[in-house]
Image 1: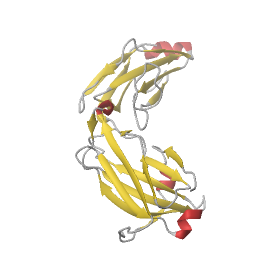
Image 2: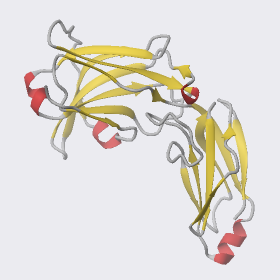
Image 3: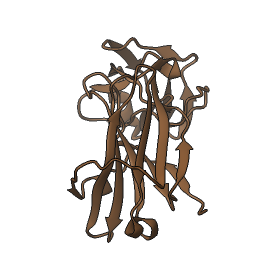
Length: 233
């Protein structure tokens, strides 16, 4: 049996924009490949129910990538899914497969497209992935309190949010990724509002002239709310 490579691809936008060929969903009766997993939110403490799950085969050249839907389904009340399909002969030797998760963008915080990729996927096998986390959505209002000083110094200043996302479901103070990075300048608006992960621990890192530091404690922002963060250079 061939070995397969599993990759989390939350920002695979270029290939996802490729031409897609939709076909009726066949029912697999033999030599089925089954992909199973679970979608969670709120730091992994709650399931995501009713999310659309789509398996695609991606193929073609880098300049003209294509994709074909193999099967689709939805997560159950526990956030779980299990999708079976048959890998056709050409699909055994070309391209790769993805499982894509589609959630309500008005309720959940997403970084690009939520996808998991499988290369060299064999027939007649069952694979269960780790829990995949998509946070609920909140908002951060960042207010730069002393922007003129940055302009006078000619220095650099940026902020970064870090939180659990995708397969990264264990929170640490030094967690990287899962949030937005903003570069601030001496001119322009001193205030910005951006989406952030909600209902789970969140770290805010501030870097002044390449000297980084994190907030003393993690913060927790309830879903659907906005929290103000004053920033001092």
